[in-house]
Length: 104
Image 1 (tube, one colour):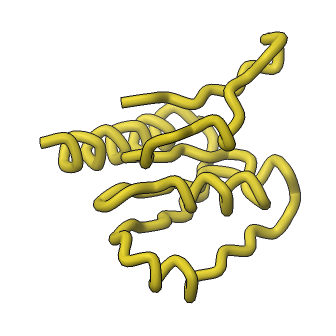
Image 2 (tube, one colour; image 1 turned 90 degrees about the vertical axis):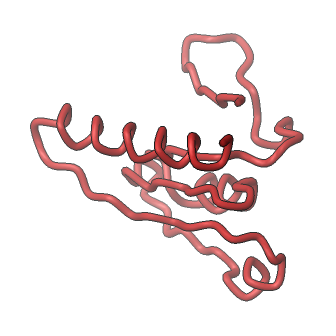
Image 3 (tube, helix red, strand yellow; image 1 turned 30 degrees about the vertical axis):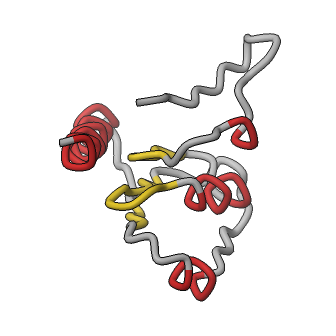
């Protein structure tokens, strides 16, 4: 399993263009073009979890092209409430369940 982590303090961050294998799960709090690109990297049985929209950009995904790709995956939008811990814990656990299902 590979994690793509963005750290604003790091000199260099792994770019999605550098990911060379399908992702089992994506947790995204940026939205917009980044979510659309990350969703394109999700592999069979995987899931992208949209948990925010920090970019304030709309997310446009070509679902026709995604459907024709033959990859069975899902996109689950999720709105958080305060306090965040319970909601984000739920998303983390859902993603872990997805990864376990794909890996087994």
